[in-house]
Image (tube, rainbow, N blue to C red; front, side, top):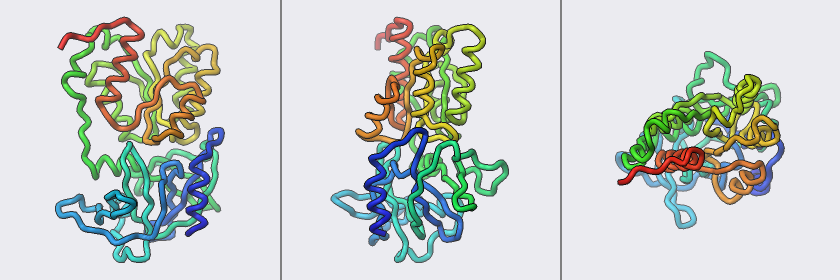
Length: 315
């Protein structure tokens, strides 16, 4: 276990070219799952948990660690598997998603692997638990499933997806209706969250399920002759995506003479100083953490104001 943790500590400081590192784990069966190492703060044996009355059924309790109270969720139960009966010999993966810290209870931790995003593929159509999968990859001739953690968290936390009225009403309707945004994200939940936010401020959108698809759409538009920066207000992209990640997509946009003027906003559950440094390195224009409807809506409004000279309505 110490070796796994040493690997986590080292690898969270690394980033490759369209590569990621996955911590492999199990949820009570031989099937292996993966989680991006950049999301992980710590891996530990399950500590004593304190049950919280009326909490969501997948929250097994809270753990008190390093001065913080962290909810611990049974990840297998969250995706429809039987709950772990005996947690004494299990592990907790402490993660940071969407600027919040939570633990995921797993039955076993395997090892860390380094893979290329091109080998991370969308889940096969019709797979039994496909609604909770965001991607799959092959390791040792076995399928490793990557869970849509954003979907799990959305169901457990039941966070609001509404933009506040003051922000919804701050743009000029005609100006906002003339804007169009490309949304690139592999999570169906995240895509719905973003497009719903855009709908609430009157902005239309096109969606792509990964960086490769997003780049293909942009190149197709560029081939039609009209400057893409004229027809598109901005690109909102996730970072973690199969086939091509958001870092690589942004770098490809910025080096393409026909696309380099596009405004790129990275919208991701990855957070912290490390991610801000990577956003600057690849040339993105802005970073907004998931999922804060008001913050995302305000970022879009600011971009529209910069692009069109639109003045905010008086309160």
